[in-house]
Amino acid sequence: MTAFLTSLVFVVLAEMGDKTQLLAMAFATRYCWKTVMWGVLAATVLNHLFAVVVGSYITQLMPMNYVQIAASASFIIFGLWTIRGDELNGEDKCDKYSPFWTVAIAFFIAEMGDKTQLATIALAAQFNTVLPVWMGTTIGMLIADGIGIIIGIVLGRKIPEQAVKWFAAVVFMLFGLIGLYQALPAAVLTAPLMAASIAVLVVLCCIIARKGGNQVSKKRC
Image (cartoon, rainbow, N blue to C red):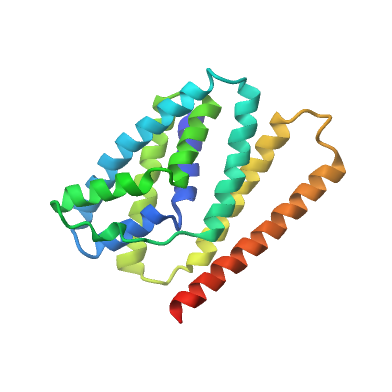
């Protein structure tokens, strides 16, 4: 149950402002929301099954402590990635198939190498289990993309996108820092090093947020 709930929450947070959530918003303006959700489900089931199998296999190749450190570090990276944000690069222009297959194929391709897929691999590696992580990440994707559809069609821009992104990013990085604290040797966890690490993380957040803001401004111009 812990693996299921953790996977669900983390993927919901990772998907906020992600490319595939933007894709859900785009498709929901053209197709029935039920078709979009079924397409998302089909793509996510296959994509995340692949991810959890890969994540579980990793634990057989290296010590679990190293896997936990890598997984925790990846959560921090996911947080920074969330601050940076994503944009669509033509994934919503695939019109060669029926609406269901258009959504499913576009989502499957967009999710390959995306941070929610990488988060699924990290979670499967951390918990060393397949079914709970697979179910949690799949349901999490459906919840997050359902929220994206609601925001895109019903609520419009009433909910500030930046507030959602920052909340998700802070939670991700907090869990990553806690995971590193629990996995790293005590000799490494000195006060100066921890303070310096947090300072570097704050600086990175500021740089990435400013860079993302500049990119948005250029596009609007």
